[in-house]
Image (cartoon, rainbow, N blue to C red):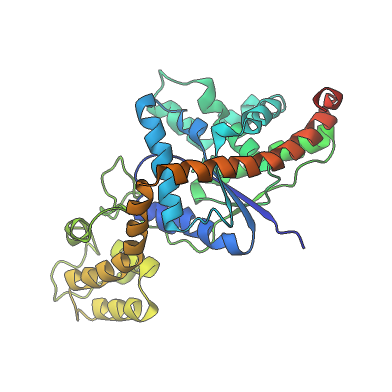
Length: 330
Ligand code: TRP
């Protein structure tokens, strides 16, 4: 049987943190065995906010390195760069002609961006979800591993698909988001989402010492003031991170010891550090190695794009047929 296709887009936004890693990234890696996966570094999406062109090449390069180091396997899956396969933007244009502006004005991320920066609301910001829809459906992908903040975008994608299929005839399947079992990791402040801009993150490429410095002062159960107080793991962000990295026996042990004031928060964090670093250390090793392998990384993207184009050309030829311009493209 033909494997179902998976697509997900990765923003080349700089350093990855453990929130990114246990969120969409782990799912993207695990789906590779069962599905045919296409992962795109979405540089055009990254250009919808102000950026420095001098940094873009490095951001894309590091992004490819990080994902390969973490376990995206270019032998199994396609790793490609959005701007190298022009069918993405081309299809986005066609989808633009069937997407209501009123749909786009309702998208939460657009509303947020507009509020944050009312003097700089451009077409690309409004159109962001349409390009995202094109990314997915140009491969006829049916499964899309994402974080839960992307759900409204996926709903819009399905709306666009339904409209295309009903106006022009069936071409595209309706893609479903895939959330998997992802614990919601907060930042080290225990309040906000882990994010670079809030300076509350642990990064994938930090040394063990750097990680410890941050973990040691990270917020736990705020009601547990002293080591002799019993704590509640269910309200502790460190415990959530434990569940993402530690084996079951350590998770159970820490929960028990917290509830009975057996061990203190620092002891609990030390166990977490060991487990977390055990998983991240091999990734860091590969990261270091891959950063020196410029030709290899470029080659992976070139090959990925070649394979991607074989798929997108087939889809586009169906699209040309449905919209009545096929004979010119033969
Ligand atoms: N919007 C996604 C994000 O910010 C990135 C993205 C672009 C994407 N195109 C996509 C995700 C297609 C899934 C599918 O994370």
